[in-house]
Length: 512
Ligand code: ADP
Image (cartoon, rainbow, N blue to C red; front, side, top):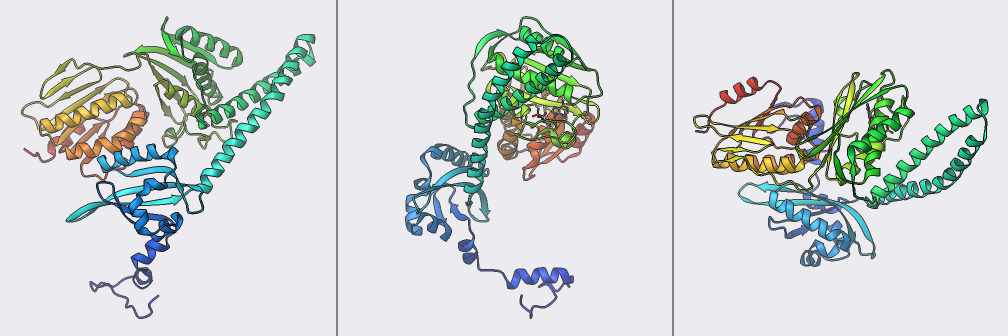
């Protein structure tokens, strides 16, 4: 600290004693930027907008055991593990095109001949009159990555080792059950059979997670009767859970091509959760219908519900909402596995829930793998297909967009791109984005919206965006997540009442 610094700012204003201390520390202890850059344990680098690296700090030179000139001459790709190269180049190219943050996990070759895992992050920074630069860091995450891998390996070995003795004792158990007469011993054996089944399910979940992590989950795809499968699963589960009436509403004769065993597992998981998390209720409602070439399965319970801040994370590994971790047993793996199975079938999932009232877990599976949607009407100012209407009426300065039906990453991307085209073509700066007819959105669409779509909408002239929310909690979350990272060049407001959204837009200045 510099004892001579005065207790006043350069503009003459007095600072509080605390502010004085902080200012003082910043001014007097500030290391030179070169020292900071070279002593920081992370690799720091910059690149021009063409993607060429033009600076690396001393840490990078020391890690690679090369001079700065050599590192710059080789370029960073020379040090990346060949298995990580293609993915990291793809991400880098995408960031160079979109100007959005670059992140990648990759192994870098150090001077000791070993590869170490790094997390690379870079952002495009504007420099006033000069052209923008990319500033990036590579952080060594080798210890975290290797301990994660060791944990996964341990889980994989342990679950395999547990499975064999369990299968054997289950076999003997069944034999015993067949041999004994009705009575006390039989009752005890039946009870312990229930526990053995639970243990078997836990081990199977752990094995599945290891398979997903290692990219080894294999799907055996065949055509089967989805409606019949659902009826069988529900009938079977009704035996296991007599406490709840399982009410099924299903359309008949729905055929689907996919892995029947794995999809049964998803339904098992949704229904057993519905029962487990509704201990005071006595029914669970299951429905299956076909909408717009998608099978939609919903499982509704009248149980504890989930607070909205947990909804997005529930499909992550080991995640359990805080109200369930102590009261209900489980590992927090079922939904993670289910999400992987559904995604691998090209589908999506969403949750509606009211805390204390119950939840609806739904998923959709596309009946046609690649749907090409032909527009019903397409003019310069009007577009209509079965998911989307875009209307730029003459005499109004607003572009009206109405979304209909379930949305996923494909429909959202297509609709979002059309919105950009129509906004530009019709020179609008206000958008009325109506989601009232959207019963569900797949959450991955919101990541794309946040990183790619909104910045492009802003470039196309967007200034005011009234987002009329769907009643679906998951869609609302997706909508809000879509604007989370936006640097807010445009004003975006959410409305539950369409009239209010329209009024807000009308009061905004027109660009005409
Ligand atoms: P587990 O039930 O073993 O914890 P899951 O992956 O199946 O694992 O579920 C993850 C979490 O999601 C649960 O711990 C619980 O917090 C929440 N959850 C799942 N289904 C429901 C439901 N029907 N009602 C309330 N919470 C649920």
